[in-house]
Image (cartoon, rainbow over all chains, first blue to last red; front, top):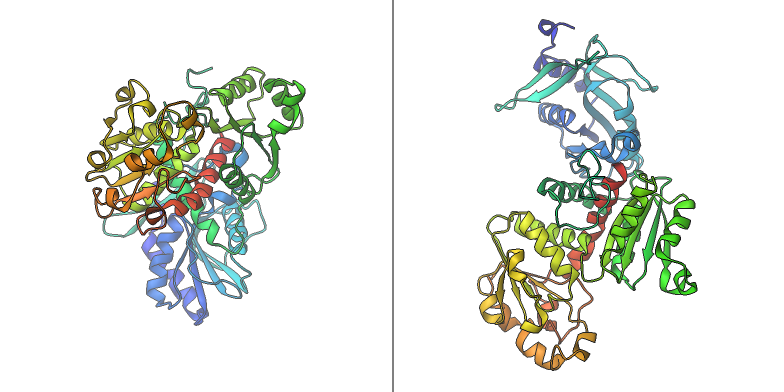
Length: 171
Length: 320
């Protein structure tokens, strides 16, 4: 991806809204994955006018690479504000890549109860899955090099933006 | 090996031996991580899988109920397997040395030792021995060594203060009682000064204050009414009955009269001051029941917070 091809996060949120709206029911529960997914979920939750409280997950305690990288020093509190037993959940994240974050999020959710179903909504799907996980609602498909990543940031006005980050490996 | 045996070559916490010498960022990271663990206790399944398949050995060479139990709960909530060893009743009575015991447990594929010992420095000895013998994957957490340090108690005290007072920057904290023999006092003083508390006071009779205690950056008071004036936090220490025998104190009744925390003495503190105690309490010796059971006491929340703080410590060191 080149910098001028970076997708417009706000437009993608609108696209997600159009996809999600017809599926929403009174008992739909929205849960955002910290940090980017939480920002998106806040916007979706407000725009959809969901009456159930919004939940947030920090999956640091469920990561599968703890033994290699240790504990994330910026771990946040997970707040699942209601019984999720039998709930219909929309899990929200910013970028879907290997699927490991989503696996960790689902493992954590099941420690709160047994949801009836979980759907995944992501702003961008960059492919590269390492686990059998798929999103039901996708803002856009993107193609990124291995050393590239899309990072979501939130500006002072609360607007979300993608930035392209390139890791330059020394040779 | 680095000069601080608690930190690995990247400056990350790999053993917790003492709060003294820990960078402020490390202490703050433990507190914020504990915050995230606190909510695990409210869930249906009070467990996270971080230490699944790891073996945590509680090595207690000295009696403890609260500390050992909260370490055990913390390890189990991290999904570790916990093995409790009360060593006074075990190999040492048969003459096995401390490090031989450690080597044997290491050979049983231990991943972490939680150590309480009557001798100051015992956890250091173990950590350095493990580092020296190349057992870098085994982590040591000090659960109280002699008069030296009780770092997880110090950290849970800081967590408690932060929970109720939000911010350390404007606080006056008084530590009252037997400072001389208290590893809790030492860990609290180091933690409070590391976190930037502007005024730390110690209050007690001359016989129960270490000489040169001022060099730790505290103000010394011998009069309770004076020392408690306008403080935000009162940390009471347990008066160990065995001190009475050593002629350091006339009697428990005398001590209570001068240094026991009564509602009347507490009224010198700020009206929103909190009262802490590491337990076990001697009611009527260092604290009046009316205070211990009163609205300003946060002694039971301290115990609950201790679980989250110990989960944070164990998961941080295990990951480094």
